Length: 411
Image (cartoon, rainbow, N blue to C red; front, side, top):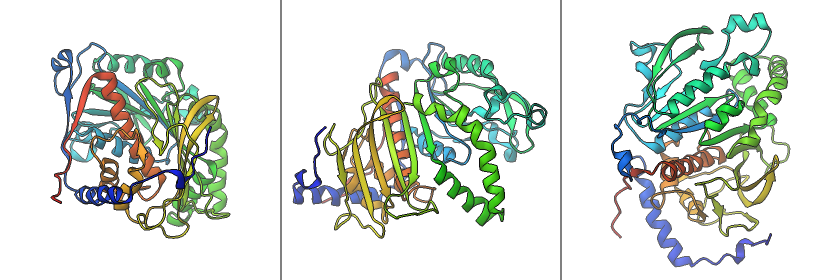
């Protein structure tokens, strides 16, 4: 490994500034709707309907694993937004719109399935067994495997529904697969048969210290729970989480790991975070994103004239590493952004981001600027992961996701 200090990276100042000015103009238009569509690049895919894939194995299956309250819903919005599509919403319209209580989110291009629907018992049944929903024995992996295999082959299924409101197992709903099917929940990679079906997998890894800080903010500050009750809740859940959920990190193609900041000593509130984007080496159709010089080990503090940084600042790092027995490439961000439009400066120094036009990553961040994590590495790397998964889908399926770039601003 060779160390490349930041001052050794030569950048033509005038040319770079011109690019940044143009990119900022593009990013300023990020709130203008960007039309996205799927365009087939092969004859067989042209024969498919716009809404579903034929039963020729054309569905791409993506798995996202995380504990509850770890940002899956926000990541799902970022990911489905990258793929575009229209008519986004709950399957059947949802309970409030004349439908039913569903956990399934659909558009004309994506289907998002919550794996809680494969709980073996309802809430009352788990009280009898004395097991939590994290326990593998409380999940119907046989049915999960059979139904995901059918979806991947392009066939419709009758999927069970776990009602989170009252803890019951409701009448099954029919799922007709779209081009992209995303399964999210506690255990997308826990069963070897299901794991083998996944084309791409990602794990949202919120470390214990951050999870504890977030839960205090939500349950103690906002809901009035005591610190003791929060600690008891976390400690009661931790053994099953460590036994049944956390081991999936080693099987994921990408891990987004959220840790306490290194920039503020003893920071305990989880308001400033260090986030790692851990990319497994050797994944087909996936080229890891990198900073400055591929394969080098770099630390970069970008704060200055081109990136506004209030205390405690921002620090990036990049380099090869090892994670749970896997060779990986790691991007890291510690700190918070003050101005999302200035993110274009950081984006311009990254490579293999899978963007389709200059400034697309920044544009997507601005679009979801009000969502949790949009000022730090969680939103930044969730957006980068979404772009990389879109690129992976295109390479695997031969179907291009068309994106209309913002109109160029006259010089």
